Image 1 (cartoon, chains in turn red, blue):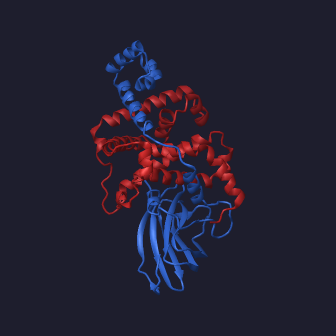
Image 2 (cartoon, helix red, strand yellow):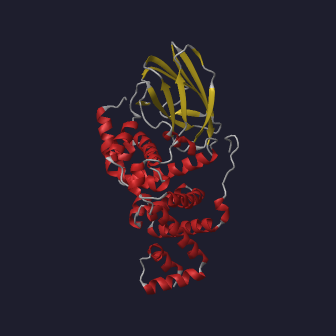
Image 3 (cartoon, rainbow over the protein chains, first blue to last red):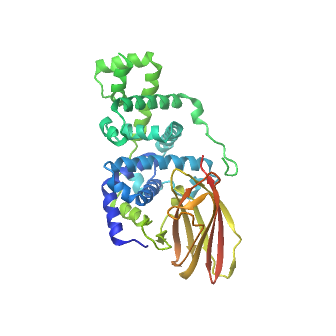
Length: 190
Length: 211
């Protein structure tokens, strides 16, 4: 490990206030503690490469959560076209400690995962910007005023974009085609 | 009731937080307005995601993630903090984030046949590529070389097509994380060579442009 001591402290201090929010958001998306940790780690890697820039940002949590959503959608896309079946990696959460804490039963998990997979597939179709904006507002609870400060967009524009994105999401979810794979992967080529 | 009013209240409607009259007015509108009905379906979907059971990250998780996040963009040494350290657990789990390649440095002398993999790069973001190098014993002075061709680069090393350094490998899994970026439309290729007096391993990664 080749940390510069002061740099590590600086990064740790920067990330600590946001870590729980990131980890919780990651669990909502990945549904497993192991995948959530990997996802958060990926965001931390990116944050670390932008540490100077990030320290100057007023809304660090929004930047980190937005990065988390982008990264998650990228991973989902990559997994769909990967020839490797990630389900066999052992990364699905069998962590009894985690399962006990979240209190889910296996049947519930299967149904929940199907539903969530469909939603995330639809969010991917919506695109990074639109889905991140919606997630920050509807999932992470950012107010319109906070979103205005993050994006620089007027509240009226934000309202109409959020409504438009919700409508598109609802339409996608009512379309049975969303349940079919977007890509059929053969030999790892798109 | 008009769409504008429903837009204001739609999240509260989905959460069941509206009073009886407000709820009835909204639902009457939704029943005849396809756009608002779709929006209500969309909000409810986001609430499904929001309401997933989740627990805060423990101090142990925080320390583990911080421990793995060691890439230092300011370090000027050739190695640039790419290592995440040996003995890191869950090398396979980390593959969900990026490609994980297992190179096993053999005890017996010889050169392994090159193996290959694919990794998708993007010009809009830096993507970390994880490489897990498994050593079955401590190996001092192992040489790691990265050869790049095509429209790709290791972030922070503009126009550098070869990176090489010598390092000690610890027993178990040593993780190397390379931040990769596309700088054109052709994609590229990366050859990872790990050599030691005992043996040599070569891994070829086809770097394909995402999208």
